[in-house]
Image 1 (spheres, helix red, strand yellow):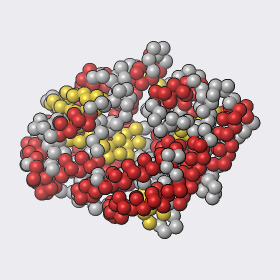
Image 2 (cartoon, rainbow, N blue to C red):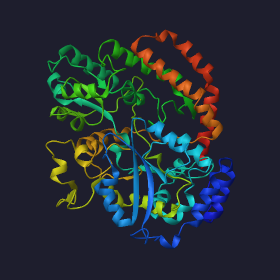
Image 3 (cartoon, rainbow, N blue to C red):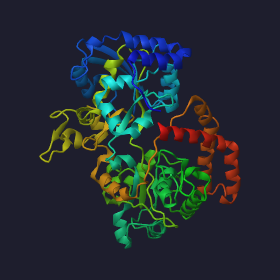
Image 4 (tube, rainbow, N blue to C red):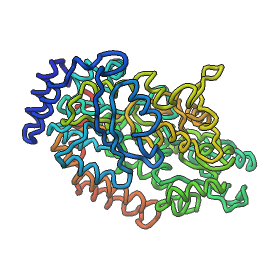
Length: 536
C-alpha cells in the first residue's frame, strides 16, 4: 500500500478518527497535534524548541544499561542541546510487560514509550485505537534523517508500515553493511584444538561430526571437554539450517520460508529436510557431542563453562568478548557447512530493522518536537553521540580516524565494558531506537574477531532476508491463539525429538498433529501478510 501525503490534520482525522473512534483517543490525539505551538519548533538545527518544554517518557531498563536516565551524561547533554527536558520513568526488565500493560490501560499515558519492547501486535492494536499516533506526515516534515533512510531503503519502509498504511514506531536500524551485527551470533571453533588434533576447520556437516567426535574421545584440553555448546539448541539449529535447505529467508522467521522447488511459502518444520536436520542433531546429542543439559542451561552457567575452557566449539557471540580471561582468544570463526546433499548456506542473518522502538502517544502535546528529538539519533552525529558520547569526555579520535573510548572506559580494571559505558551512555542492553553504525558500535558484534568471522560466512548468506510481517486484527487473533499453540508444539517436539524423549518414528503423527492444530489457517495468515509485504 503506497502512502500518499496529506496535511497533518486531515491525515490524523482520517487515520485516527476513523480507525480509533471506538477508543475515544483519536479526538485527543488530533487536538494535541493541532494545538502544538509549532512556532516554538525549529525545523532544523539546535535547539529543537526555542522555549523549553517537558516530556515524560516510559523507558524499559535492561540490566546492563544506566540505572537512571534522568542523570546520565548523554541525555543531560542532549537536553542542553535541544531545550527539551525529558523526565524518564525507568522500568526494569523484570516486570516490564506488566508495568507497560498497566500504563497502556491507564488514563495517564506518558508522552512516549522508549525501549519498552512493545509487541508488534500491540503497536497495531493501540495505533488503531488512537493511543499511538501515526507518524507518516510527521516523519515527512520533522524527521529528515529518518526519512532519508526510508527513501534510500524502501524495504525498511515496507517492513515498518502496518496493514492500515501507517507507521507507528521509530525502529532500530542497523547499517546493512555491518554484517557482524546482522548475524549477531555465529559458530566458533577452538583453533588450538584443531591444531592439536591435526584437523582443519570443518567445511561440511560430516567434518563437523568428525571434529566433535575427536574432541570427545581425545579431550585435548584435559578438562572433560564439551564438543559443542550454545545457550540453546536453537542456536545450533540456526547454524545448520542452511546445510539442510531450510530457513532460507533468514532468522526472523523460525517456521516459514520459501519452498525452492514450488516457489511458494512453506511451513518447513514438517518438511523432510527439517526432519533430516533433526536426525543429524539427535545423532550428535546421543553420542554426547552436544552439551547434555542444553535444554535447561542457564546463561551464567554457559559463560562459566566457556571461561573454564571446556567448549570445543560454540554458537554464540565472539568468545573473545564474552568469556572471561584469555580463553576466548583460542577461538576462530566457524564456516557455513555443506550438508549431505551439497547445500551450503548460512541462514542466521536478520533483517536490518525492527518495528518496535519508540512510539508517541495521544497524550503528547508536542508531537512535532518529539519527532525531531527522536530523528537526531538517525543522523551520523546523533548515532556517534548515542554510542560514543562526547569527544574528550568519553572517546578520542585516533590518528587513523578511529573512534575509541577513553582508557577509563575501554580498560577499566574493575568494570566490564558495558558497566563502564553505562556510567555515561544508555545503549548497553539493547532495544533502543536509532541507527547503529559500525564505526561507533563497540559491543561484541563490533569486535575485530566478530567482523572477521562474519566475513567468512558472508559469501554464504541466504540471498533474501524477510523482516517480521505485520498482521491485521483478525490475523493477530489467529496468530496469538491457534498460531501460538502451533509454534509452541513445534518447538516442544523439536526438543523431544533431539533429546530422545519422543521417537522420530512418530514423525507422521507429529505432522498430522501440526495440521490439526490449525496449519491451514496459520499459513493463510502468513500468505496474506507476505503478499502485503511484497506489494506494500
